[in-house]
Image (tube, rainbow over all chains, first blue to last red):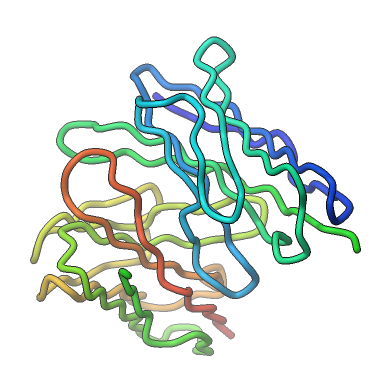
Length: 115
Length: 113
């Protein structure tokens, strides 16, 4: 079984300050992990992915995430928030299961950026 | 860039109607997916397909069916629409093989009156 928990449904930061979006996962197998971003009335766009290579993963738009197996976490960070970062973010855990890819989405974190 | 195109951005239908949502991808991906997205529930998988004419039930298939007659096209069908099927519907595709991310369309916001 696998699951993913996004610890905050809403996060609010001021423009120019750091962003931290938290994600914890549970998986019986070595998982692959993704972060997606969804802007209003748009589909999901891949930010970054972890696939058992380097534990610190860099993504688009200045985001990065660190895979910490001991803490079962994959938190998303950015040093300095920009107004355009306001969106909803989804943490996703996947594993191969019987020839298919089992994908589990978190419930999302809405990021508000205050000018 | 991969493009996943959903035929309608907004759709309004009536209870009991048969509704078709269409999705087309242009990257020859083997796998295609239909999700619905509701506030506080995240994305829930309705159906997926790993090849032409193949389909598998996801987590919430009741009240839905799918069709994949061509590799690039994956259709979601609401046999008899009900108000509890009002939602945002997202289509995605991905290549075969391990650990490939999904590519999403912009979604169809469906309202059933």
